[in-house]
Length: 101
Image (cartoon, rainbow, N blue to C red; front, side):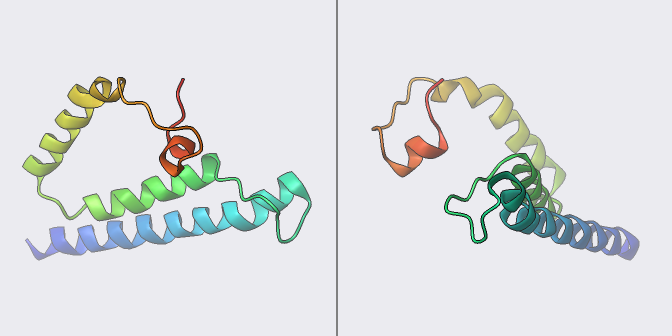
């Protein structure tokens, strides 16, 4: 049983370090490649950053028990359309993160 926890620790370390690396890579190299400005006037968080943050989230989710992960997955799949009716004021921070389609 100790092997499983060792494996979880290795998976956590791998996902967290690689995710952090990808997020930092997005803020430095990828932004510079797009804008040719250092430091950039605007920080764009694009695909590489999203993959990195997702890997960090997965590193945290590794430690949750299977029934909790199943319930969370079911909640996300079954409930994602429930938020379609929400509208946020233009210019608010949440509007910038979740713009309308």
